[in-house]
Structures are given as structure tokens and as C-alpha cells.
Image (tube, rainbow, N blue to C red):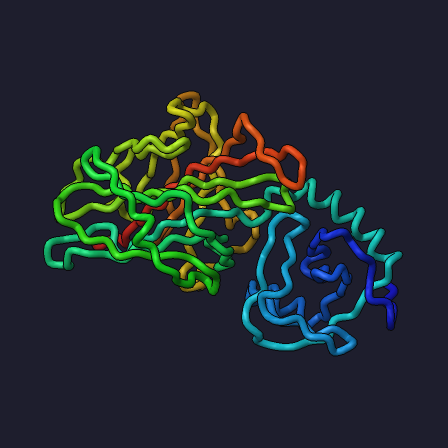
Length: 349
């Protein structure tokens, strides 16, 4: 592989990519940069992305450089943990590697990080002695990798209980999740039963996919030991309606839900499942195992058994019949029905 000493790289019209096992990045300025072996090792071991210093000494501040896995997903850099040299690559080499990367991306697109809207309450089974309120956090992320993305002010955020829906949008306040802007609120329970928290985000433009993403996200909370309404359908444009009680589940339990779109079940819907690796301790032997995928049956019903306790996200993805305009062109819209469910450690012996 030939490296140039003074060539800063070839402009790429805004395309950002990461190729050859996390060895090449493209800066926002269009520079192609090769990561040193030490950089590569840190990426593999930590699954985090550092501040980099180019060969000419120019520093890219944390969060200022964004790149993607095989042209598929944007990921923000995290805080500085080390500094290594990066070698600018020649334009000739990058033209070759760019063509190769596109081919590999087409083959491996399914290994890319999955986006998830997230609603995570501080408790999903509120008992009389626990106090009557919980914190509810809203975010947008790659939950297993711990890669946060900016969540803009949602279009809607509500809670539904016994057929009544309350608008909670005005009560949101700013917070940080995975180091990126998110929202939270405190909710006070006054009656027993099941409460369904739901969010409709603003459409998110995903440059690498050439489409908009809208994830209608919800979670269920039981208050004061009552579970009436645990299978409530709240009328989102697309949603997963639980067929297993969405709280009080043991790790290893089978979870079932039906995927709904515009009021009707979606036959053979594809559902992505991912663990919220909140403390970063979970690891996988292959990136193929980060996002699990199952298909619903002819009635839109899917089944999944979780291998461990914690929060698990289920995302049923469909393409909307309408398009949205981006830079003067009609673009497709991905509609996601996202449901977050917590599973508990088995308490027996």
C-alpha cells in the first residue's frame, strides 16, 4: 500500500466511510486518512472512536468528525482516550478503495449498526412502596454499541392510561444520553394500571441510506401492582402491540408481539432486536450478533426469547408509501415501530 507524504487526500462530496476493518476514515473536509495500527487496535478493543491527530498536526476535536461503517451508518467520535498518527492516503489509492468499499457495503449492509428510538423509564413496575413517580428518558442511539445520536425535540410525547391520552411534550427537559442531546421528564402516577409512554420524533435524514427515518417508540409501565391494559394498542401510525405482557418478564422468556401499520397487521414483517448495553460490559464474537433479526408470520406476529436480563428493543421497519423531499429530491421514508421491554433476572435457585 503506497502512502503519500504530503497529499491531503481526495475530496469525496460529503461521503464519509470506514473501510478495511476500521482502517480508513474520511474527514468532513474530504481528507482520506489511514489509521495507524495502534488506532485500529483501540477501535477493535474499545469499540469507541477517539480524537485523531493527522500527520500535519491538525487536530480533529471530539464529536467534530463523523464517519460510518461501510458507508452505512453515521457514528460520532467519543472523548479522547489516546492520540495516534494518521497517514493521508493518495488519491489514486482512494479511488480504488472507494470502489471496493461500495461493493463490500452492498454485500455487508445488514451488519451495520441499527438506529433505535428509545424510551427508558427508571422503573417499569412501580409498587406502592417505591414512591409514585419515575423518570422517563427519551433518546436516539445505537443501543448495544453505546453510540448516541442527537434527538431533536419530538413532534409528540404522551402517556396513555385506560383509554385516556395525556400530552407530555411540554414537560420535557434537556439531558444527555450516551454523551448526546436527549430529553427526560418525571411522571407522577395517581392510579393503578398500565401506562403506555409513546414518542413520535421528527424525521431523521440518514445520509448514508438516502432516506428519512421515523421511529414511533413506546414502552409500557405497570403502576401499583396492576396490569390491566398491558396489551393496549394506542393508535400510532405503526406500533408493536404486545402479545406477551411487556413487563414482569424473566430473562429467557419468549416475547411475542404483532406488528401494526396504518391499523392493520403486517404479514412477514422483519423485526430487529437489540440489547441496551447500558454499562458497556456485553460483548459479541461477531458484529452479526449485535442486531438480531426475526420475521413475523402471516398474521404479523413475531417471537423472540432474550438470552439475558435488561432492556431489549424491538424494531419493526417498513417503508412508507409516501416520500419526503430532501434537497429538491423525493426520498423514501423508513417507518419504525419500536418497543422497549425489560426482562428480569431469574430469582429462583
